[in-house]
Every structure is written in structure tokens, then in C-alpha cells.
Image: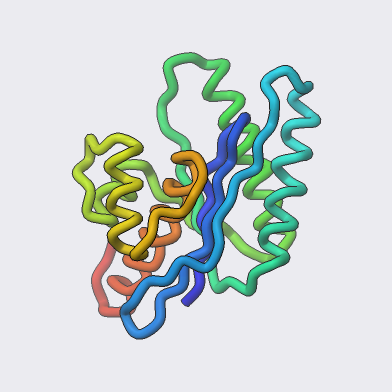
Length: 163
């Protein structure tokens, strides 16, 4: 199984591709799409969309997983995140996928980090699981953690367990 994980953000959207073969995880690819806060929002969203469409087009994947919406400090930041998440969903839909959402707590627990783990804790666990810590901002390791979470949940569902 190959999963494309997305950690949406209005200034940095991370993505990561993870393969599971015979119970072993392998890092296939990862990266991020950066936008400038000074750019008009519609241009930032277009850049995120086009970057994800291009990245999805480079890889043959079985599923797409995305971070679920969570609470934010302000309505404005929640709206920006929702817009970035919306174009990420659209990019996945362009490739025929309905992304599976996972909240941050589920992701942290699924990769073996505790629920209050910070970005560095998530990156360390992703590094341990994949045998390497990919370069880039925390959004990249978060996207890889989301992909790993989907793999873990798919295994559990295949074994007859429920979420």
C-alpha cells in the first residue's frame, strides 16, 4: 500500500508518500509547497492546489490521507486553514481520491508519540519508523505521520478491528 499524506497550511503545505510492504514502512517522497503571507490568498491557494496536483501526478498511490480540521486561536487562522484544506481536497479529487481525515491526536497516538507531543516529538517518531528524518519543515514530517496513520488504520481494519 502506498499512501499520500497531506498537512495543509496557508503558508506551508506538507506532503509525504509512504509505502508499506510486508509490514515495513518506506519513505518514497516528501516535500512542501510554500507561499508568502504577502501574496493574495487566491494566488496562495492556486499555488497549493497546483503543487499538490503536480506531486500527486508524480506518484502512483492507493490512498490519500489529510489532517482533519481542529480548533484555532482565531477565526481568521481557522478560515485560512480551511481554505488551504479545501484546495488540498480538490487536488486529491482531481486524481480520483476522497482523502481520509485524521485528527492530530489520532496521528500522534498512531505513530507512537503521546497525545501532547510537539512537532519535534512527531519528527523523531517518524524518523524512527522510516529509518530517516526527511529534510524540510515540520509540515513534511507531519504529512508523513498522517500517511503512516492511514497505513496503520488500514492494517487494523483489514485485521477486523475498528477505528
